[in-house]
Image (cartoon, rainbow, N blue to C red; front, side):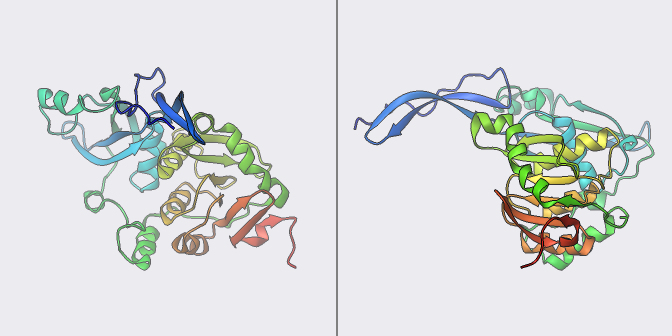
Length: 313
């Protein structure tokens, strides 16, 4: 078998669509290889800035940088702020815009810094302008909101932090047929246009109890996909989502259950496994939780009585 060309790492072309781009690769099958075009999901940094305070005394603060797939950036920013408890009503946000530069950078320095960002650096900084009467807890911002499963803080502290900011919940009355539930992963996959192109991106879908797809978002980060999805619903003034099911294309972590809770979602299902702390959130806040939803089987971690059409052996 001939060795691939030594100078062939990848040949990138500026994409017409920022969410994906083409690369030239060498595809190996057995003892032969050939040059083909492949499509990759784009991964770029997004800085989220927050502008708040009274008119004439506004402050602007950079609160997060996340690696995301470009597209639905405003939904992502709104969803992030809503699920982190910074905003509670869509009217808290006056506008969301792309910012010209990062905080504290001179114009020349900003241009030099951003010139290294792929494709469209002017679209990698989003500024959320809050209404003048919205009070922002700078202490929460400095702590980077609550703990996550990767920070080393105990689960008890994470749950206590979540209890202080979660919205009031009503009794969970959501129900769904087991047969309807098992059909949802295929419907989500069919709606994932970027996954169909790249095979390497997370999806989050919102469904009603009849199995109707209400919305879908994709991103290289599973948390970003959920923020985009919930942010779009938040900006459309459709939260809390008590009559909706959130379906995740991967696993369910504490962070994703936290986001579902903040969006008022009644049920979370995932095709992968939930973490122990995700299950605890589901139990503590009465969120129906299903894992390993594949083909005609799934595991119920909380809320079995809400899933109809199945019986115990």
